[in-house]
Amino acid sequence: MKQKTNEPLCSNKNTTPNNQLPICTPSTNQKKESTKKEGVHVEVRQYLNSFWIPRNLELDRLLVEHDLTEWCKPEHFRKLYLLISLIQHAYLDFDKRGLKRNSFVPIASKTLKEVIGEHRINGKCFYRIVISVLMKIGVIEENRKYRAAMDGKNGFPKSFRFTKAYWNQPAERIQLRTPKPHKEKDRSVIKNEVQEFIHSNLKRLCLSDKILHEVLVHASDERRRQIWLHEEKFREGAINLSGGKNQRRIAHCLTKCPREMRRAFVLNGRSLCEYDTPSCQPTLLLHFSNQIPAAEDLDYRAVLSGDFYTALGPPNRDKGKNQFLKFAFGQYQRENILGRNFTQRFPELTKIIRSFPPKESGKQTLSCLLQDLEAEICIYAVVRNCMEHGLFVVPVHDSFIVEPSSVQFVQNAVRAEFSRRFGFSMQLKRKWEQEPKEFTTWADFSEENGLAA
View (tube, rainbow, N blue to C red):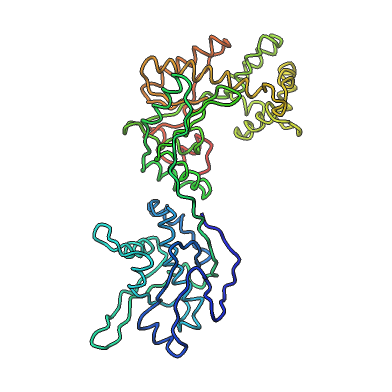
């Protein structure tokens, strides 16, 4: 959200450290006296994107931690950074201002009204709201003493300074990238009744602010920005459902958003849950079971009955999954643990995997074939079954977001479909459930889903 620049910290006589933030200075002989009387007056351009701040300030993190995520929008960020920049600029320009480092900086209310805004929200001036937000998150302190000019006597305005956490910090210049204003549109391309059913279910969802806040608090900065982006798109109605170009797999807003964000979606206030088909891609290789020896097929089914990725790969399941994807679908130029064990244990199945052309060939790859099988089972069999019985379901590739009361129905439908096609009994695995007894803390949820706490 913010971008550092390498501008110098000192200014010449005719410029200021922030040339986007020109501050009108009085004559040399009147500097100290005028500052005390009137405070800092600013002439600011209509659109301001560049500011001076203490280097250790992490404004977006502080806002999230204090449950003020609505202030993370760019238009609010600018107002917060503008007041911070006024204080920081006064410290950088102390030789002209007559101010001591870390002392209170007088800023006239007239300036605050003009630059930050004087429109009222719930009976309170907007610039006062901005001040209260920065005070609440521990960035600034306010000296409320002031005196109005009366009967020819000079007055002085209220003043502000950084809290001790930001004293004597090096200053840096940041820029806020201004996205082009546009309205997100739903670019869904619906081709059949099942896709129409999924699209209608997605439109019934809404975001829980409470759950979303919990997710944001524990997310990294980069992940948090991704969640905000997908939140904005969803709230504006961008479902964006479409089928794949080379296979029947369906993508939509929930398949593209960060996976930890999915648990924040609710259905008319009712709780939802997500159940996953474990080791789905390796299981779909049973499509070739009649082309390999019976002993190898039996051994492969035995491995699938446990945790496939840790049985053949490293102890870390996520690493094992990545190694399988590289082995089965990538160029696989460097041997990995899972690939080596798979090749040694299932040589005939490995030959079949290697017989498929690479993606660059333009022909059907193994990845596209298995994704077609996945779509036939999860979407055009299981989801269609739910549609015919009037049950809510949103597929996310090989997992299903449903109401807890529908879990057993979906479980039976998946088991029946895998048994019919491959003679293999599939047991769905829970990924998350809203307000469950089993997930009492974020740490439990993170451990269950392999997320960093």
